[in-house]
Amino acid sequence: MPPSGVNHLSQPCISDKKSGWMKWLSKIFRSGGNRGGSGGGSRHPHQHLGDQENVVWRAPARSSEDPSKAHKEKEELDRAIALSLAEDLKRRNRHRWRTENDEAIAREMQDKMNLSPYPSVAPPQFHPGDIRYCGGCKRAISYGNYLGCMGTYFHPGCFCCRSCGYPITEHEFSLSGKDPYHKSCFKELTHPKCEVCHQFIPTNRAGLIEYRCHPFWSQKYCPSHEHDNTARCCSCERLESWNARYISLGDGRSLCLECMESAIMDTGDCQPLYHSIRDYYEGMNMRIDQQIPMLLVERQALNEAIVGEKHGFHHMPETRGLCLSEEQTVTSILKRPRIGGHRLIGMRTQLQKLTRRCEVTAILVLYGLPRLLTGAILAHELMHGWLRLKGYRNLNPEVEEGICQVLSYMWLESEVMPGSKSGPSTSTASSSSSSSSSYYSSSSKKGGKSSAENKLGEFFMHQIANDASTAYGEGFRAANAAVNKYGLRRTLDHISMTGSFPV
Image (cartoon, rainbow, N blue to C red; front, side, top):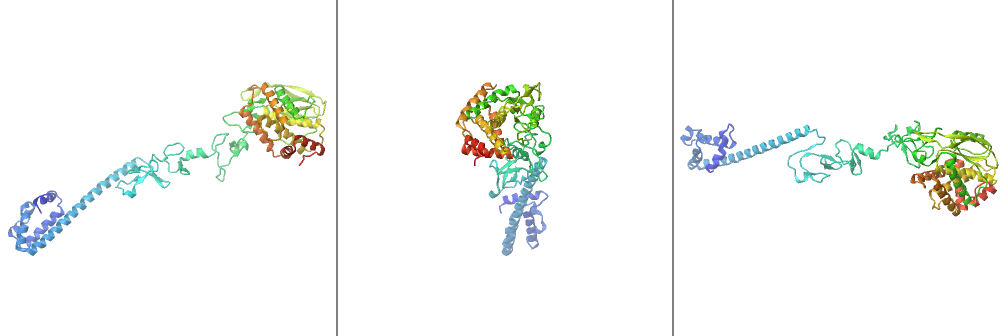
C-alpha cells in the first residue's frame, strides 16, 4: 500500500481510540518479530507507531527471507485491512442512524409540546410505495402531523367540514356520504328545530326524535307545546312562535299577524262581503229574495244563541256561524276594536232584537276571523238559509251539512283560484264569483288578496276536504262526488225528492 494510505488511516492513532486496522497491524508486526525476524524489530517493538517508513519497508525484507511466511502474512494483512474498513463503515452508519434518530426524537418532543391531536409521520426516508398523499390537497405528506380516516390521509388543515369549511380537529365527526361535518354543524343541518321555541327537538325515552307537524303548514314543534298553554291561532291553527306574539281577542282566542291583516272586526265591515256572496248565489240561479240580517258577534253571544236555537247540528268544539230560525236578542259588534299592545281594546257592542219574518231569522258569524274564512262561513250558513226557504225539510245532518260545505268550498275555490275549473263549479258560478270578488276588492284597503291570504284560502279548503267528522267531513265528500258527477242542480233536485245524494 502506498505511504499516503498509511498516513490517512493512521490518523486515528493520535486520539485515545485506535482504529481496528492499526490494531491488526500492530498484532501482525508483533507476531512477525516473535517468529525470528530482524533483531531490530524485536528490540524496538513499538517504533512502527512513530516510524512509518519502518512499517512499509520491513515487510518485503521478511518476505525475501521466507516466501511462504511472507505470503501468509500478506493474506492476514489483506484480511485485517478488509475487516478494518468494514468496521469503520459500520461505525459511520451507526453514527448516522443515531443522528437521524436524535432528530426524530427532537421532532416528536416538539410535536408533543404543540399538543396536536394528530399522529406524527416518522421522518426516515420513504420508499416510493410508502408515500402518503393528502385526500384534500392531493400533495404528499412528507413530514408532520396527519389524519388517517375514510380510507385516506389528510393534512390537518385539509380535513374540513363540508358545512362551515373550517378544519375538523375533534376526535369524532359526522359523515354524510363522503362529506365530513363537525358534529355540531351536522346537527344544525339535520336535527329538526322546534318552530315554537327554536330549540333542537329533544329525543324521547327510546332515543328517537319525536315531534308534532301540522298537516298543512308543516310547522314542526315539540310535543310539550300542546300542553304548555302555547297560544294557537283560532283561524289557521298555527302555534305561536316565541319571537312573534299573537293578538289576543279577549275571549280566549288568539290571532296570528297574517290572519289579523284581513280580519273582519265588526258588522259594518262585513256587509260588502255578505252581499258579494249573495250575488254569488244569484249567479248560480240560487237567488235569495228575503233580506236576511247578518250580524258579527262575540264568542259568548254566539254560544248563547246556539243554546236558544231548537234546530241545527253542531259537532265542532267551537261554532263559528249560525243560521237562526228562532226570535232572539243578540249582542252584536257595532264598532271594531283597535289593537293595544297584544290585545284588542275599545270594542263597542249593542243589543239587537231579532224578529222572525220567514224561515230564517238571521245569520250570525264569529268576529275577528280573516276575510276568506268569514266568507266561507257565510257561504255555508247562507246555504242553510236557502234550503229552509226552498222547503228542504228534515234532512239528516250528513246530507244538509255536506251540501252546505260544498257551497263553502266552491266559493273559496272561486276566490283562491278564479280561473280554475277543478272542483264542483259551473260557468255561471265562475262569472258571478269573479264579479263578486272584484266587488269586495274595491272596498278593500289593499285592493286585492296577497299571497299569504291566498295560502290561507287553500288551508280553509284543505280543512273542508279533510274534515274527519261524519256530518261535515264524510257529508262533504259524498256531496262533492255527487255534484262532480251530476252537477249542482240535479244533486239538489235529488235531495229534494229523496233526502239523499244521487249515486
